[in-house]
Image 1 (cartoon, one colour):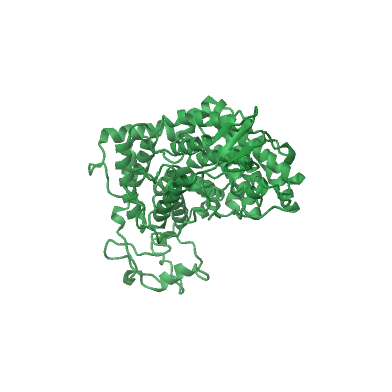
Image 2: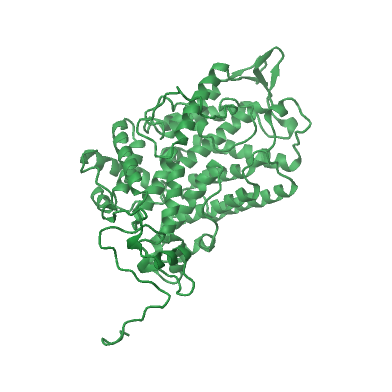
Length: 575
């Protein structure tokens, strides 16, 4: 029922403060800038920062103000950074080979480059960058598109945008651009909360179909945030609220798609892994007690139930989507490894090699450790044996590559951890054939064979991508580690050569360069200075040598191991 024409206008609340729109073309900086028309604060108890900006005239604010006229960003293709034909080729490659791997194309719904350019230059830049990263011999295009992406990223940091494509672009960049992953993921979550995506599930539950896309994007942010939180061993920014606990309700709407099933499945999986993280923490020296192992078993059972809820063969699901049977199996093994590998916390490899009595391999620890060993082996085998997974592997997010690399390095470290040095030769370790005396189902030859086969497959996979792709760094790192193993005098025995002093020196230089790079607040330049001179003031902990497999049993993500090995001589080492 419409109000009569002569109806009196609605009287403003005596608690509200109304300011006129800015006379110029600037939007004031503030927590709800651009959202004032959609505020849901009550007059009695408004949000503190909204109340602050309502009580003060934002037009007279001396805070930084940005021009929203260029919220889409300059069109770098029009500016000549990249030929249109090359941009079309890269965009089509992304739509065909990469986009389906992210929940059936959920993060890029544009069907043409022209349509995407009309929506967001920022999205176009990251899509073309990721595409160039996954095509051989496209280094020049990668250089141009990445430069445009970094420039647009700098320019967008102060913008209060209302374009969902900005969040999609940040997520895509986080999933594929290695050294920017944490920064882009954090930025995406912040922008998402500024756009009130965390409230979209409530609106969707009340029948607002317009909130459907926003709810899906909130779940993407949850997965992205938790992937890198677990990989880096840092607490996630997003917590388990009602929207996350009730993610399956998204599938009951008539709008749900095939990609939604895969997305909700990952939300549920990372809920379990996040619970394990908060239960056991990230301290590598904190051993698990009896009660901890009970909770660990509960989490492990939850992962088993998760796999049963998502059968290996789902009708109507594309083979190249993340809901395929091989991808689900891969995530299943990675999740169980992530959970159970914490059972080896607090055990020092150097102490173990001297048969120190403090080595306590009780039944609970043995059980969880054997699960970690088994799932690490299974991770290597499923990649080696499944051809469909090999085809899609190069386009999977870097979280997968990081976890696969950690599983492989775990197996190599387990082969060395109980080795004993020969008298008179402190640079060589004699490795046991197996670890049965410690109650572990680990055979050195089997582990080395599986890792070697995995490296061969990853090397073939890397041939389908740019020289800057993270898989090439993983192959280089694991290959150099494997070279330190050699057959022993007895059949089935192996030796391991400890790193030489020269290797440690070179690694220290790499770590210095990495420390300098990470200390810079600004985004990394296109051609970072790789000089190691004048670095005496940089405090670097060089005790942890990526090539020294006799350190503590800490399986956290190590950027130096994965990405610093060949990074010093790389023009685009930040990828």
